[in-house]
Image (cartoon, rainbow, N blue to C red; front, side):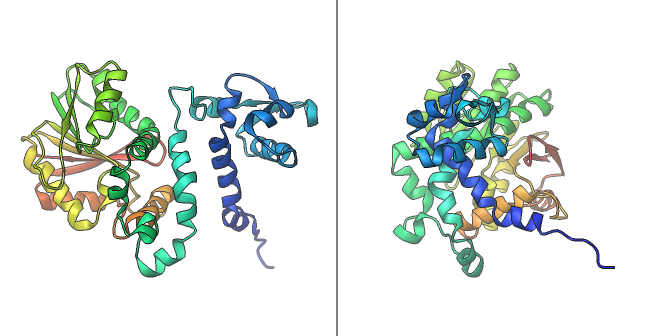
Length: 342
């Protein structure tokens, strides 16, 4: 007798872009922010969001069915409200807002992922460089408003991981931390806010540091977190007990990954450690689907950039001189890959 099989999982994945774009459009239109802590009918939301009457109830009820909104009642009498998760993470008024990364996915990545097949067959990036000839970061740094939007998107995506790192890692043996490619200074702020004995420095390019200084000041940590200028390709790293890189290594090819690891090794004293926070892929490459999809995203964005396993990281770090490595799970699919220098 033939085993019973179902195509439901295949269809769920194959048509998954339906649900994805419904969420991305909801973030773009500000559905979750319009609701805030209130309950509103479809008739109230329709003009507030600029929805066409044909779309209103299919759209809102699809969000209910996807678990992104709650609803009391049905039809025109139905009242919609945020779920606890969307209230916390998708209302722009929430301090835990992570929608910036979804805004970027909607504005950029959704259309670039339509070109995954050419990326797979050519190994070439499919982002802005395909149309303008300018590398992504070059175009980004030339537009201050777009740069700040990108940094906010990355901050939203990294918030839970950096908070988990500040909570879970044992900082008791360390007095100084330098965050390489520190963007808005978010990682340094999480660490400095929780561990008063750590002196933190967030380092990035000159175009980024004014944004970082403002964000650090907004968090009330200007006296605890120093913002400094650094080009991690041309400059040596400042010496520190801990050197961190949040979502940095995966942006580059193997030679540049090894170069950055070697710079970290040279800057660390005996007893120091390098921490790379990424969507580390499991060594068997079977479980962390998000990490593997992130690596495909790096293909689309940069061509030769890629995410990596804990075993990969350990091998590169041992080549640089580090004595031992470990993986510290953080939030969701992300982990801290840690290399220790004797």
